[in-house]
Length: 316
Image 1: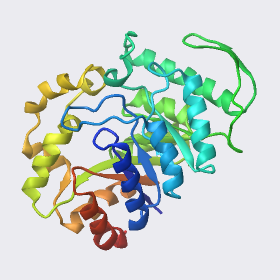
Image 2 (image 1 turned 120 degrees about the vertical axis):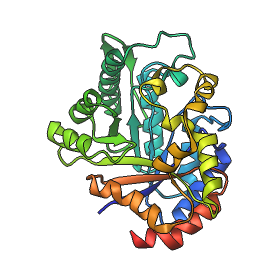
Image 3 (image 1 turned 45 degrees about the horizontal axis):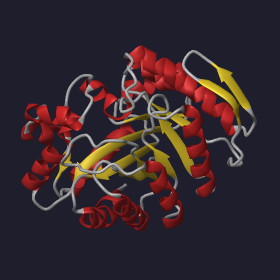
């Protein structure tokens, strides 16, 4: 049976707002939380970028829902040994209800210290080595590692959960999906792509959980909802690899004219037709997903949670 969670967008909301949204999500009947991990928003209109690990600490006190980063890049901006410490503490604070979602990242967030932004195949190599390092540290034993991309000397995590933190791997293409199947405790993506789910399961993922994220814009005026999506999240509809290689929010803003309102109508559920919202989520069930996380675009968060509590989740 599909599990329904809420996707907290750190690019669009400040820390106090995110904690309040988590409370509303739990009250509305959502079963778990995703939270993005960014240094920058995708564009200036989104306007936020709180440090995710501080927010997770607050969430651990505010709600009882499981929490997962969607996703953290543990390879360039933050060394995997530091990410491992943050994740272990998050798991302890949430009494084991934390999962670490990881991915190969975007230049937007990861190049800020002046490091070169590697090509995709190197980023996947780095991600695989980072996961190895973090799994060793989650044991609570001293770790020494001298690898191709990372060095760890005499590192030990003293604050660790009873069970190692599960690591889910994000993937949008065949090579990354193969890596997720090989090294992940689960698979993370943002489209109901049945072929990718099948590849993950047949490639070694088996019955491990597959989780998806989707964005909607609830509101009584569908046209206004479409405009809100185009203004705040046009970047989600940009084609190709631009989402991985553009370095700053202003570079994304230069491409905003490529995304039309018709493209938004075709790709994003907008408005207050409960059947359309239900159908959008059922697509993930039909594609073989185990969990789907919904994000409401725009300021009408309370209206969204009331709508899903009364009109959408009861149908699911």
